[in-house]
Amino acid sequence: MSKTIIVTGASSGFGAMIARALADEGHIVYAGMRHTAGRNAQAVDDLAAYAKEHGVRAEAVELDVTDQASVDAAAAHIIGEHGRIDVVVHNAGHMTLGPVEAFTVEQIASIYDTNVLSTQRVNRAFLPHMRRQRDGQLIWIGSTSARGGTPPWLGPYFAAKAAEDSLAVSIAAEVSRFGIDSTIVVPGSFTTGTNHYAHAGHPDDEATAKEYDELYGTTMDDLLAKQAELSPADADPEEVGRQVAGLVSLPKGQRPFRVYVDPAQDG
Ligand code: NDP
Image 1 (tube, rainbow, N blue to C red):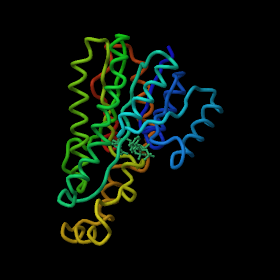
Image 2: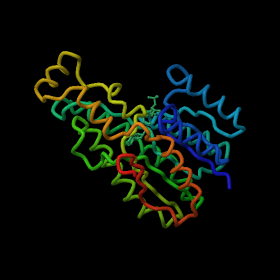
Image 3: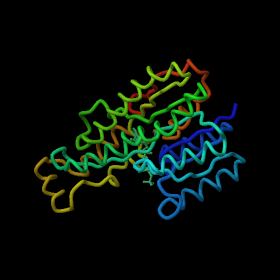
Image 4: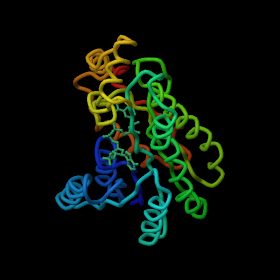
């Protein structure tokens, strides 16, 4: 059965892969993107080309997870077109590298905003429709990093993913009475955007960052080496998309609370 699905943060990485994997299964997919012009224009065009080439139904919709008005507008657009929403995939995320001490409270708040508070904005926009339908599915892209600890320099991001994990499990117990399932998909380390340490940046300007690097004795090279260790060269990030598509195809009530996709633990 074809379902109507929104995937947040679908301009790159797992989000783009999840959107395509779901569209390939015959679902109607809205790929939420922070912008549908400017920096995300290429992603919008790529998705349209993919949909045309494969004869699938996937389109970009503007959805900035840090802006309730943007989330509400996306929800109104989708409900206006289809009258329902079957699946929400909470994927949008962002990380910044640095020793915990280096972060200002505002910088940590921004990481929480994109990774955790974002899911609440999206849930508040879509859950009332799922409750009315007495049917729906929430899928959260968590992280093995929610366990905290290593690799170093990811404290605020780890904390945000731990909070997301806790929300996902808590809400599962609450919404099941409405026929809504909630599953957290827990990937290990893959070299998609968020986890591309070299691109993640430090919260400080270059000079201060260097000062912290020296104080804490960690360099970007150390982090990249750790990343290579956790993310084997043959780790296939498309597996996350396949897992999400598999969860959507499972009958209601048979979907697990948690699924791990961790290349470091495979084999
Ligand atoms: P990417 O950077 O490739 O993807 C992140 C996506 O989130 C981008 O599409 C980005 O959009 C979007 N995004 C960021 N801020 C916003 C916003 N305010 N509104 C809407 N979209 C936004 O990273 P990944 O694919 O690696 O990460 C996706 C998810 O997977 C995250 O939740 C991450 O925590 C999780 N994860 C990743 C792992 C990995 O190893 N890569 C491991 C475990 C979990 P834009 O292009 O506009 O910035």
